[in-house]
Image (cartoon, rainbow, N blue to C red; front, side, top):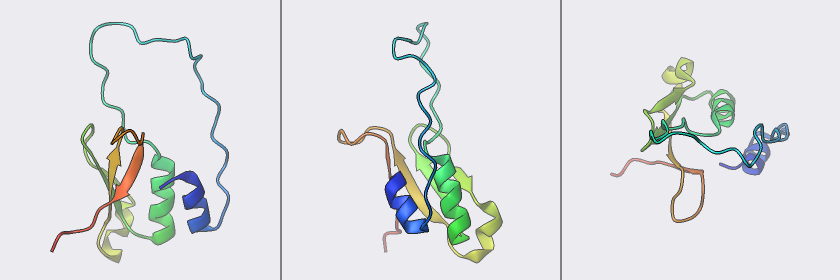
Amino acid sequence: MGRCALAKALAWPLPPDPPPTRPPTCTRRGTAPAAPLPPAGQLEITAIAHATRRAVVVFSADAPELLTGAEYEANGPRLKLAYHRHYYGLGEHYNSLVPIH
């Protein structure tokens, strides 16, 4: 869910994104592969968990599943999201998941 959609859904403004912290000329050194990054947008995922009072679990191919809002487990089934870093050229994004019956 994008920042604008989240702000509209929760009916409150989100703070602006911080400026990049490293200059664009920096490069990664070494030949070892980089460690997988955790899913982006954890602040927004936490906000969704608290706003809906539901646990949210994020599945990703690059990281273990991330559970947010565990204190809301008794309130109903978890909201399930899939994190995609690069999927058909769309860039980083989340998709909601529903069970197949």
